[in-house]
Image (cartoon, rainbow, N blue to C red; front, side, top):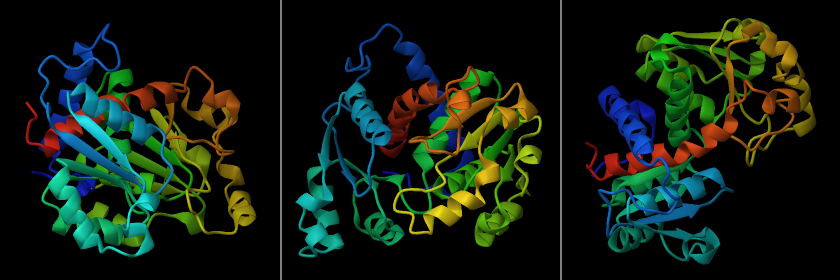
Length: 308
């Protein structure tokens, strides 16, 4: 049994094995209907329990389809339906019940503390579907998409992030260390990643550069990432933050500095990207979203110890 909480705690070998397995499984599903099972049915009889404390579209759909294609089943719980949300049952007791009924638990949460407690108390694999500090399933899927489109190892590419320092960027920073790729981060001075995370990255031979100029950050890049400036449950002065990021919008003028780059966005989108870029040929956001299915499948197999 293995948890999938963040990328820094998983070996490079296993991360690459997950991506390799996802590539193989995607190739084998050509001309196959969405809910048709994979031929080997590796998780037949297994139940994935999901719970979302934050809104979810792509993570919810992709994990549901992923476990179905692996011949398992999925049950989605709403926190407002449980005793947990009303404070009438401890998180420890909830962990024991879920471990008894299910075979894996995927959680999207607003609390790192909940992740830590569940990781210690659950006797089944725990998967982080998004937490305040990390979004590991998203970034691993994005690496899959980049290598599929660019037809190169991500270690040979230059990646740029334009926007806020949030949980998605945190996982991208961890991935840049694990996969040894160049990462340029373009953000306003007061919105840079945490010093603690950057220190860890530096100690592990990172290739990260931070720019307070968006054009310099994307120059000659192969991939440009962005995300919503106002994230889910972001408790900030909305007008001030949007004003601070005004010069960090991904638009056609910015993308002229990296004409061969693809554009990626984990969605949902906001004013951080223009329609002109989002709907352009450089944009690969729909492929990016679809690929979540294939990588989630291989993450599940990793957690169950069934990766080939």
